Amino acid sequence: MDSVQTFLQEYIHEHIPITQDMAIAVQTVTPQSITVTAQLAPNINHRQSAFGGSISTLAILAGWILLKHRSRGMSPAPTLVIQESTTKFLKPITADYSAYVTNTDAAALEKFDRTYQRHGKARLLLKSQVDCDGECCAVHEGLFVAIARPQA
Amino acid sequence: MDSVQTFLQEYIHEHIPITQDMAIAVQTVTPQSITVTAQLAPNINHRQSAFGGSISTLAILAGWILLKHRSRGMSPAPTLVIQESTTKFLKPITADYSAYVTNTDAAALEKFDRTYQRHGKARLLLKSQVDCDGECCAVHEGLFVAIARPQA
Image 1 (cartoon, chains in turn yellow, brown):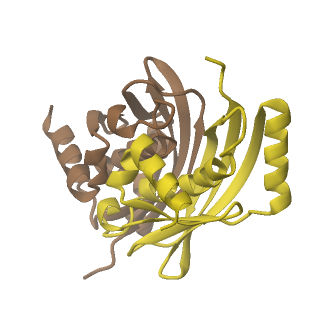
Image 2: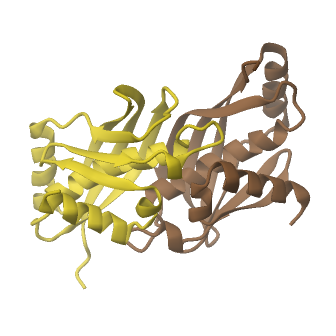
């Protein structure tokens, strides 16, 4: 695991502790893409498949961690929050699963960064996909906002 | 705690074990309404407020548990799943929080029950609200489906 992965995984496990209970791990990380995974066992439901709340959670984190990663080094550091989250559940998830952002075109991401740097606030819709055993089992849209932290 | 609450809380804790980690509890239960609560501590995020994934999860459960409760005694017993889930996050949640279904008009619920009994399948949009300290902090729409279990 490289140092960026380690930083991001430790960050979420420390600051969003339910991600530890869900056995969520940060896998590949680049400025344009990120993959997060979750184990099925702690996220199981009454149908022996992944619980909807746990599926939505992993999809939200895929987007949030991508923006968190891109915002390292920005000054002032933004607070990143989700304003709206929509998950469509397509197929039951019956094994460990992964999520990644699918609409990572460089122009949109760079515009988001620039808008934040200029105005102290920016908004971006990120689409993510949740896969299991090589199949798309859920799709997610998350509207994220970066806001400059109030000065202490 | 009455026996219906006990049954439903034990059911989710056993069959959706992440609800235990989230300290989710079933409170009031009637055929038209249900309230579920979550403690802030296990659901905290990097801003010392409730994590978006945990907020969506509680809202999903408010709807799912209401339908689970109504379906007791139906034959064949339905499998209840969520097809689509949308959460709008309105305000940070900085204490323990609760969720309940808001569009529980008896006619729509009874139509859902009848459709399931006749056709072995029914679909219902449930709206729920997440409150903290007496304020509405998030709203949720969940499209739920009841499907007759395949015969063994």
